[in-house]
Length: 127
Image 1: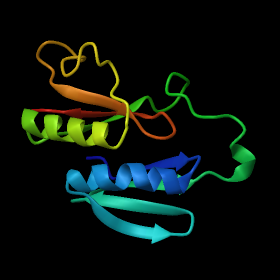
Image 2 (image 1 turned 180 degrees about the vertical axis):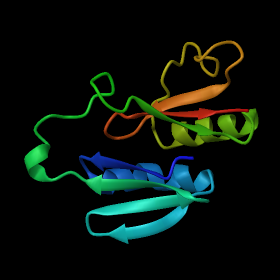
Image 3 (image 1 turned 120 degrees about the vertical axis):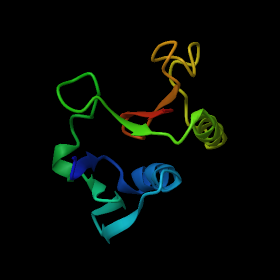
């Protein structure tokens, strides 16, 4: 069982704006909040976002470098994926692989793929 994931971000304010609504849609709640970070918790697992110190911002994140590639979350249903897809579009968040959406992961894999402000790929997968 995963306990928590901690992600350093380039702009905490943008990150909170992006992740807060999405994680709350999945049942997460704010767990901790401090000047340089926030954590959101679902059951026993939580995700932490921390503002990267200025001295470490010279090399931006890219998911194809060594390190985290993406985070994938369980959706409740295909309809849930569709609802979140609409909300992403309303918020102006670009959907990845639109030419294959919602089957970009394969014909038996119903999901939406998108990126956070630091270009971390996010995936919401139907059961």
